[in-house]
Length: 123
Image (cartoon, rainbow, N blue to C red; front, side, top):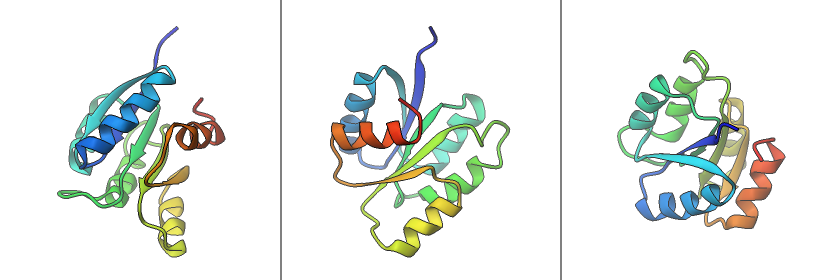
């Protein structure tokens, strides 16, 4: 069986490490990107099945990345979960309308992230 793949996009190395531990525990192969630009380059070569995406990052923010991702060949495929501290309802609606599959508030733990991944059909 081919392992499932997940790309974690966050400018915080600590958040990437925590998220990596959780999704690897769910059987995913994990890659990381520190900003949206790096993530877009990665996705242009290899499209992951799941993307955990921060909103506020240098170089390219999560929303810009998401909009560009969805225009790539195969870019409609990945399940995208925004993982952010952004809590305003209009921002959440903006992310969902841009193509996010769900939304996870930071800080998150394994139970929350697993539940959200299950809701979008990724686990």
